[in-house]
Image 1: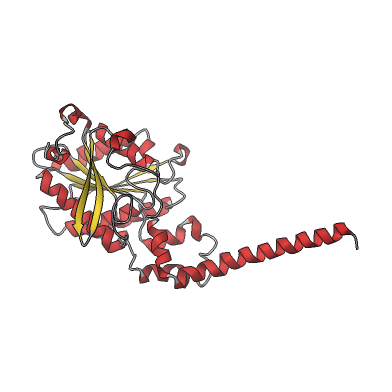
Image 2 (image 1 turned 90 degrees about the horizontal axis):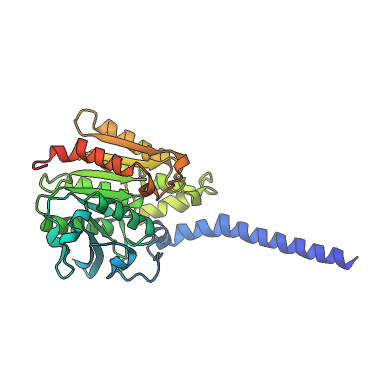
Length: 343
């Protein structure tokens, strides 16, 4: 038996061992970890341990290119503190004095956007900052914050917890802004928070948001998880539900936007890119159809804007769509501001 033959046999054996180990890890150990280590699914849904970009000093948003932006740390109770940025409309920058609280300008008459970001990263994410700049240039106030456990915010995220944070921030805005219109804007996972918040606010006419904008939304967390690229190799196995979806239920993570949109009485704009490979375009369109059907006997507008795959906007770059400002401006002028007293 030649030395070359022995070496080839050893290499083959090592490759087979590695392949078996990978198969065991992929098809057995990972599903079992999801099934029996319940916190794992919660951590992967929120991905709040990913702090990107790293080493951000949230006290100095101007160093990230955000002019007229102040940082606040707000105590929402139960030892939970959340970090928040307020970015001024561009035409107010000449009036802005850094030694005054920017929230004193929230009653300026400019519409206010409460931005609820998706999972992973912080309010300082590059694509998020790009959106703030566009909205500021369009003369919106922008309130962006990190849910508990994200960025510089203290606590552990849960579906109930992030909703409580959003409720508190909304009340904080109302306290400082008077009757200025507030628009909810939710991206990805934040769209699930947004629809739940909008449904909650809908019961109080004085607190009802002027409009709701959903960017790259999904119908519910189970459909989103089932269509996520990570689940591709598992979704056709009979134990997929028990190993991957059941733990979400045990963590009380549902984000049922397909139910919540039915109870939203504010003008609704849904935007989705056709090349989104994280939350498929079909889920955003399906949510639009559900919302539209639920409003067919009312005058509440439900608008859907899609972006062609050739634009390469994917899951988080709708901010770079050339016609985004026109879409937002038309939606606001046609369906929102002309129906608000004083506009």
